[in-house]
Image (cartoon, rainbow, N blue to C red; front, top):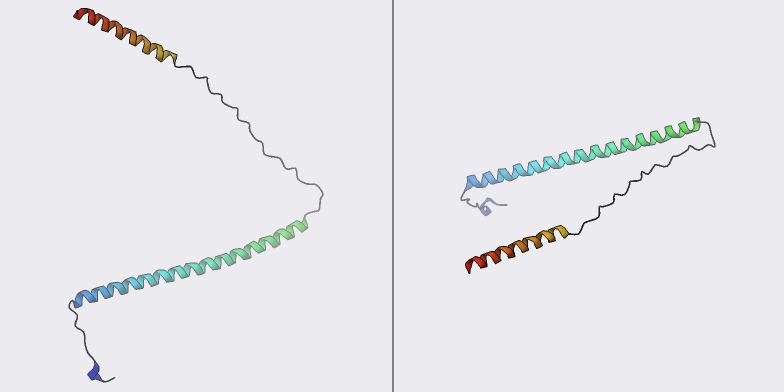
Amino acid sequence: MPEDDLFYVGLENQVEFRRKLLESSKHLLNSLQSFQDLQRIRIEKYDRVIKLGKIIEEIRTLLTKLNKEFPETHLRPEIKAPRILEVPKITKPEQKPFSEPLDEINSLEQELSEIESQLSSLTQ
């Protein structure tokens, strides 16, 4: 490529452009670091799952050996059924009719009518 074909582009705000470029590079590096941490955690998880599977398999073989060492018997263990507690039913008290408030309203109406009649007799 000959040097005569090269041309340059002028940047108006070079400092701002460099700052944004460096910030985006920093953000990219942080993202890559987070991704590597995630991959490391996934590998640790996979290793632990494999290790757990080996431990479970070892426990199964040990249980098999233990069951072989026990004498064989035809007795079955007595399994007790769980007790179910009976909760006594709570009965709601009977609701009384609203006769008292109605009686009170009626008595107040009577008093009001008496007061009105007294007022009307005074004004006459």
